[in-house]
Amino acid sequence: MYLIHTRLACADGADPLDDVAQRVLTAANADDGVEHVSAHPDATPHPVLALWMVAPTLREAESRALEVCRRALAASPKLREWEVLGSGAAFVGPYYERLLSSSGLD
Image 1 (cartoon, rainbow, N blue to C red):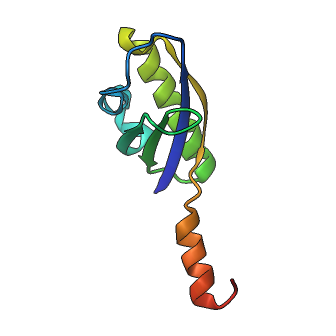
Image 2 (cartoon, rainbow, N blue to C red; image 1 turned 180 degrees about the vertical axis):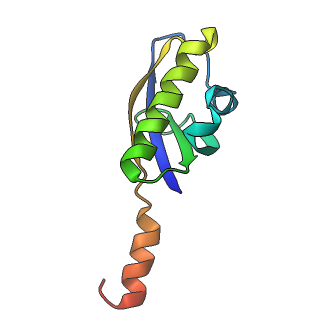
């Protein structure tokens, strides 16, 4: 399972992302491998969708997340003002810092 972050941008005056996570889940097909979606509308510099993806490779998870998000934005009149800037694996810094500190390599 992979955690993929998809960054979004919007035109001025676009509706808030209050239900975007549910809209992305609705747009996903069973073959997309989307397990969970959460929205982080206050992330800077752009709002972020976090998608937990089941896929055989990281590249496939990133590709599927990008496609599902684009599909969700295109399917919803409320979200058509938004655009996908990109998708990529999330780097979870505190996790790796904890591993380094416990190994004595920090």
